[in-house]
Every structure is written in structure tokens, then in C-alpha cells.
Amino acid sequence: MLKVERVTKVYGEQEASYLALEDIAIDIADGEFLCLLGPSGCGKTTLLNILAGFESVTRGRVTLDGRDIRGPGQDRVMFFQDAGSALFPWLTVEENVVFGLKLRGTPVRERGAIIDRYLAMVELDTHRGKFPTQLSGGMRQRLQIARALAIEPQILLMDEPFAALDALTRRRMHSFLVDIWQQTQKTIVFVTHDISESILLADRIAIMGVGPGSRFEDVIRVDLPRPRDPGDPAFGEIYRRIERQLALEESKLGDGV
Ligand SMILES: Nc1ncnc2c1ncn2[C@@H]1O[C@H](COP(=O)(O)OP(=O)(O)OP(=O)(O)O)[C@@H](O)[C@H]1O
Ligand SMILES: [Mg+2]
Image (cartoon, rainbow, N blue to C red; front, side, top):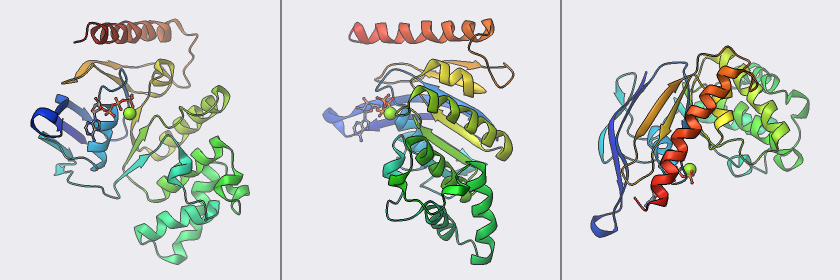
């Protein structure tokens, strides 16, 4: 279990300081798919960076299976919106995945089977010899997923990973990700601006309020069976509940709060 206990994050010092998060708390179960939603600047990336171990907390605690998170680790992997910046352009598709295995210290004789498994999972097995620049945006994101999975982390941290993709590719990536998540049973924390995306994907959606001192304003469990249908009235009901909450947060921004 990934446990966030009363986490407060202050950036900078004294007059120049900014209270980004205040008393954030949530328990994320093993294998859970959690989406984080909230207005721009509310602290979604900050929270993800704390979970990744890239940022420290000012107060509070973050633990994974009871152990404090004090820095990055191979049990967690961060995904970026722009796969281009995460992949190595001078390495082929296959070599990009090998890189993760080298990091993990996987013996050479075991690497082949792992590479085959994850490249097949993201349907890139016929593109092994290509370089990242020779792939489409969706293929690059799939490669980023394969490379991350090859390290066999417990947790995937994804910061608006599909935001730059066109609508059709994004839809395909959603079904890919849900398939892979169901096959591998990873815990996923996924940041998005897109209400529909969060309802399509998540077990729970945590909505953050505007800062300073952002916290969770609402946490919604989505019990709809997968694959989910945006035309389902129950989908629409959750959509409107989230929309109302976000509108409320945006109005606070407008008041200069
Ligand atoms: N390194 C930093 N130093 C000082 N302030 C920071 C730093 N990083 C973020 N902030 C501030 O903390 C707040 C939260 O930023 P964060 O990037 O986490 O928001 P976000 O919810 O991810 O926004 P977006 O949706 O636009 O990506 C913002 O007000 C931002 O200006
Ligand atoms: Mg962000």
C-alpha cells in the first residue's frame, strides 16, 4: 500500500515561500488505478514528484508498504507527457527497453524473454529496430510504457501522459493502458485534466482544490464495469459531479482566493 499521511509541501523560504499542498492524505491500495484531477497549478505534479521521490515533503509522511519514501527507487517509475524527452533517441526500440533491464541488473540471458514479452504487450515487436524519431507519438508512448514495465516496478506514476496525442490515438492508449494494468496488476497514479479520461480509467478519482494549501476536495469511487462507455447515464452522472466540483474550484480562482 502507498500511504500519504498529512503531507504538506512548501516551496522556497520565508517571503518567497509557497504553500503548494496542505495536509494531503490518501491510502492507495496495491493494484489500484487512481486519477488526480484539479485546476492548473493546484499541485498535481508536485504530489506525483513526492510519490516518485523527486521532491521531499515539508511535513507528513509517504510510505510504500510501511517504508518511508526518501528518494527515487526502482519500485516506482515516472512517465512524462512527452515520450520524446524520456526515450533515448540514439537507441532503437529494443535497446531502449534493454536500457531499463541493465539498470535493474537483469542477467543478459533473461533479457530476451522480458523484452519479447513487453514489446508484444505494447504491440511494438515488429518495430524493434526503429529509432524513436521513426515512431508516431502513440508508438513512442507505448515504448515508454514497455521500458517502464520491463523494470517491473510496483507503481506507475503518469503525468498527463496522453495529453499531446490526438483523440483517436488517445482512445487507443486508454484501452491499451487498461489492458496492461489488468494483466500486470500495477498500482497507477495518473494525472489528467480530462474528466472523461479519468472516468474511463480510474477506480477512484481524487479532485484537488486550488492553492495555496491545496487538498483533496472530493474522492469519487468509479464502480462502472470496464470497458466503460461515456454514453452510459451513470458515466454522465459522475462527469457532472466532477464538473461541478471543478467549476467551484475555478470560481475560487476567479475571486482571487
Ligand atoms: N520548484 C518549485 N518552486 C516553487 N514553486 C513551485 C515549484 N514547483 C511548483 N511550484 C508551484 O506549486 C504549485 C503547484 O504546481 P504543480 O506543478 O504541482 O501544479 P499542477 O497541478 O501540476 O499544474 P498543471 O496542471 O498546470 O500541470 C504552483 O503554484 C507552482 O507555481
Ligand atoms: Mg502538472
